[in-house]
Image 1 (tube, rainbow over the protein chains, first blue to last red):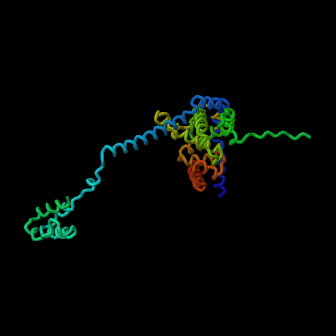
Image 2 (spheres, helix red, strand yellow):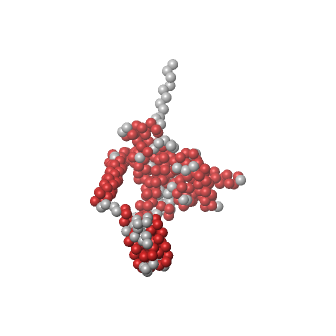
Image 3 (cartoon, one colour):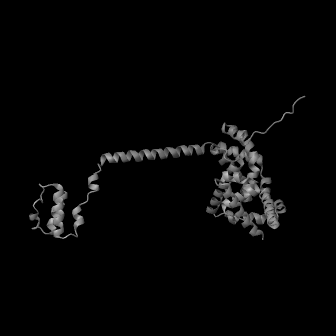
Length: 139
Length: 182
């Protein structure tokens, strides 16, 4: 226990002497003169840099936002096409009978005067033709 | 009976305020107060002897330029020493790029300076070498505590950590350094 305390005290005592000779050699007055000269040489370099830095960032943001607005005005975005998705493409695994069932359901949703209201006509179509009918209904 | 006229030295805060309003004498006074402890700190943290003067000047210039950001969260000296740590780190990077003697591998050379040779004991040299090998945070906490005699609260405020964490770093540093001496 005492050994540990002595060890700590010795370490701290040595640490207090670390760099003492470098500190003694330092010419404080000369250091102060050189520091002031350095500050006079480049007095507001950092502030100028910061101001320029922020101006550049602000200019870049303005350009970015302005450019985005201009692009949106020049090139109209067709949101419909962006999300277009044909249901018929998802029905590739269905056979002719299942496709007929889908069309009949579709017909019921759309109303009685639709193209496929007479389900007897659908029986004459094969799977490929039924898919074509579905696509035409989707637009 | 005339009262004795007591002249009290202006506080660091007063000198900082004076410097901010353009008083160069205030800056010179701050250099006078803190240059030697800063030189000790930089040297203890591994600055080559030949570079200590320049590093002290660079630290003060950086500190005076950034003094608007000093909010009095710790003493001016503590804040200055942490800036000194950053200046030393930047110096180490530049030295490594120029392939000059890297900071952590630099060996204190007392042979060329008879005065230092006389003063620096073998134990001091071993401690200096050990301190250089510590991780940066442990090194800074150790020097601020053991060399500069600062409290953990003060160290924590300067390094942006908690007093508990500062204490842990200090004890890790001491344990490592003791291994060097055993």
